[in-house]
Image 1 (tube, rainbow, N blue to C red):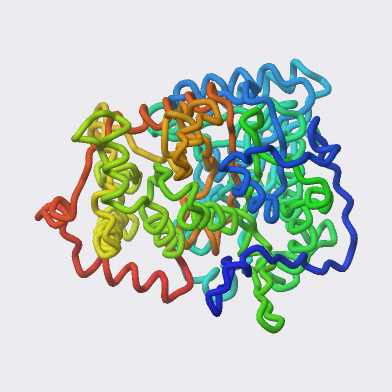
Image 2: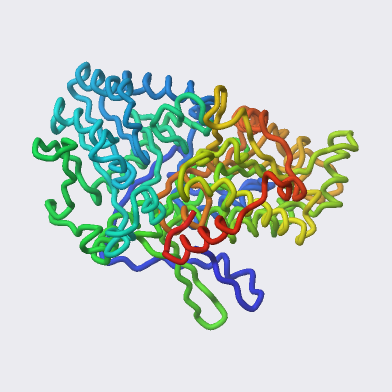
Amino acid sequence: MMIARSGGIQLLRHCTRRPIRSRSCVRTFSSPSATSVNTAASPAHPLASVTTQLDRVSPRFEIDPSAVTILNSPAAFYKTLKDKIHGARRRIYLSTLYIGKTEHELITTLDEALRDNPDLQVSILTDALRGTRESPDPSCASLLVNLIISHGERIKISMFHTPNLVGWRKKYIPRRINEGWGLQHMKLYGFDDEIMLSGANLSSDYFTNRLDRYHVFSSKELTDYYYKVHDAVCGLSYRLRPSKEAPDGFTLESPLHRGLPDPVWHPKRFKAYAKTVLEPLIQKPARQGMFPVSFSTEKTFVYPVAQFDILLGEAKNQSFGDYEFASYASTEKPTLIKLLRSLAENKELRNCNWTFTAGYFNIDPEISQLLIESAPESAKTLARVSEQSNSTHSQPPCTVITASPWANGFFGSAGISGMLPAAYTLLSRRFLRDVAAAGRESSIHLKEWRRGTVGEPGGWTYHAKGLWVTLPSTQGASAVSDSEDGDNRFPAVEGPSITLIGSSNYTKRSYSLDLEIGALVVTGDQELQRKYKEETEWLQRDAVVVTKDDLMKVERRVGLNVRIAMWLVERLGGAL
């Protein structure tokens, strides 16, 4: 998961070892600029060093920045989803945690699309535990099986089961709680040659009053790529089949019927097979290193990232004398680590500002530490920000946005789930403590998002997650460096040049137990930068700054029962 460091040798981070595979896998990734070697731009863009690092971990696609559309509401998400389904002619693929058991309108939309377009093929992937949670009462599975009855082999519905919930855990851990041991959490919504990346699932709250992020990419190459990952996970999963004998009208057909290992009965064999299927797909192609492409203001790169540690295992490091070589299995966490380390250690990027958001505030400890380290040093930063904005009241350059307890999807839930908002309060308090210990209190602030109260009229929940990075000056990238000539070498920065979008909540659970997928986008295009800036602004309209004192108030106190529950879940191998 991370690059080891020893002896203070910074060069070690740049040494990578390609994992040895038992079989070859040829993949072709083409783009207008990827067919020839680019000479380095003069002068090099400050983000060129970042993309060089990212090229060593994840596949890279170059796209037209006008091909990116950002939606700004649950209603727009739902309307776009239905419009894209109706407009699809060849394929629809949907990867999601679950489809709400009462989403009859969405099922009708899929049914109509299949009836209207004889050539249309549909593939849906959900999680097996979440998709059958309510069974034998109405569930995601019982809703979807009707599509199979109506359209047969033209629709394939797969349900992934984690190999981590087996044996006594599978037998004794209650439903809903057992989902803490791993889920299919990817969100991929593909239609012909367009792919929508999001953190939203397919149920009524995500269509009405649960705020998330939604990015549509009009790119055949990207859509094909994500389809391959979707289809590979489908191949590892249970298949939904109609059953007249079953009380809920369906059965889940084991991968054993296709000659593959079962995740519950043969977890070790299952993971070994999954590794041979998934690892070649998500890692960078060999030609990417052979034909490098330098980043410039005219380019927009997309790096698909995936986190499948529950299937692939963690990253491994090997030492040879004074050198350490890191090999990656999953790509999301290594990509994020490389980015944040570049912000923390590269002089040209040291004063970038960032915005980070996660609806469930339980950031992976290593990511949390790197976020703090990558924040600009307080005194120098505030002086520069004040100078640039001609203001003595500039806000800190780095912002973390999370859900208020009253905007948390678990607020008011029964049982252990109802303890989660308090648990996230405790974790927020610890984060602010770490910020203070690092001397970054004037560089980082924490905001909580709230619009009404969950469960009451007009109440919303907050589910957005992601990262945006902005170069440190609106006067052009040349201001990143400490050069004295003030030469304006690059166009003005209109907003974030980097964003990370996808399903991950950036937690220990996301990086060790769940299946996650997303994309890191690096752009020099001013119009796309403006879109990213607008996105961060509307996400913060209902967010207010909270301090350590706010989190210590009586209504925010965290009881002993919450602390015990957090400890118990982790001791049993689960995660929040």
